[in-house]
Image (cartoon, rainbow, N blue to C red; front, top):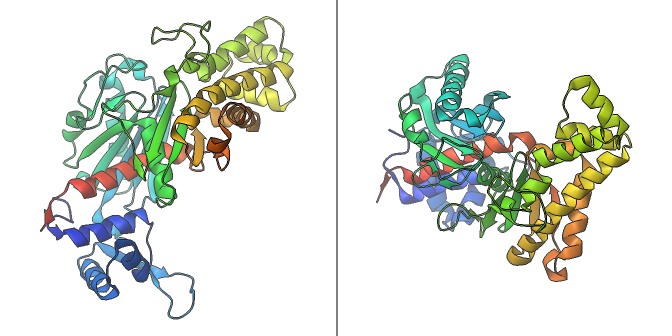
Length: 400
C-alpha cells in the first residue's frame, strides 16, 4: 500500500506540486495551487506530521522571514528508473526527489528479446537495491523506457521495428513477480521529455525532445503534458521521408531520416569514406580497431578531417530538414536534442540549426531555441523516475 493512500484530493495536489516544483516555499505552494496561506499551512503541517513531506532548510531570502524549502520525504521509499536502449540498459535507484542513490549501465542487445534483457534488468535492480540496503517492499514505483511504440495503458510495445520478439510482451507482469510497486512503461524519448519537463519545473509548456541514436524519435510536450497521441505512437518522426531516392529503411519505406542520419547511417557513411580512401583518419581508425562508431566520426571531425565534417553536416542537415516540418507544424519554443549523437560535438548541432532556420517559417523560428538536452545521458533514467513518481501519485486511492 502506498504511503499516501487515503489522503484528500488537496493533500495529493500538494504532494504532486512539491514533486514537480522540486520543492518550494510554503507561500510558493499556496500560490501555485490557488490555496489561501492558512489552508496551505494546515495541509503542509499535516503532511509533515505524517512523514510525507520534509523541510529541507531555508532558501535564499527575498525579504522578510526566510522561507522553508519543502520536499518529499526520503522515508517514503525509492523509485526505480530503467532506460532500455537498442544497445544498452541503464538502471537507477532514486529518492522521491529524484536524487540518484545508485546507478548501473551496461551494453545490451534488445534483439535478444525480452526474456534475456529483462532477466538482466531484474538482476541489476536486485543488486542495486541490495547495495543500498533497500527491500523490494520499499519500492514506490518503477518507470521504464523502451525504444519503440508503446501502448501506454497496457504497458506493452506495439510492433517495435528495432525490437523483434517484444510485441505485446507484458513487461508489467514480468516485473510484478518481484515487486508489488506499480510499473509504467513508455517510449524512451517520451521519458527524456518528462525528465526535461521536471528539470524545467513545468515552466515551458510546448517543446520537443529529439533522440538520435540507433533510431530517431521525438518526445512532444504540449500544454505542459507529454502528448502520446491516439494510439501511443505520436513523435515517431524517424520515418519521415527526407529523400525519395534514399536508401531502404527497416520499416520498408525509402529515404526515412532514420535510415539516412541516425547512428548506423553515420557509421555506414564513415566506413564508406574510410574504405574509399576519402578519410585517412577514419581509415587508420578502422585499421587499428576493426570498426568505426559514430563518436569516432566526431573525434575525426574535431581533428580537422574533411570527410568526417561532411558526414556530420549531411546527417545534421537531414535531421534539420525533418525538424523544420515538425517545427512549422507544432511551433515549439525549444528543441532539445539527446541520445548518442550528442557525443559527436558542436558541428552536428550547428548543421541541424542551420537546416531548421533555412527551411522553417520565420514566425516559427523567431524565438526558437535548439540545443543539446541539458540532462544528457541521465535523461532516460531521470525521466523514468519522473514517470514512476508522477503516475504512482495519480493512480493511488484518494479520499474525498
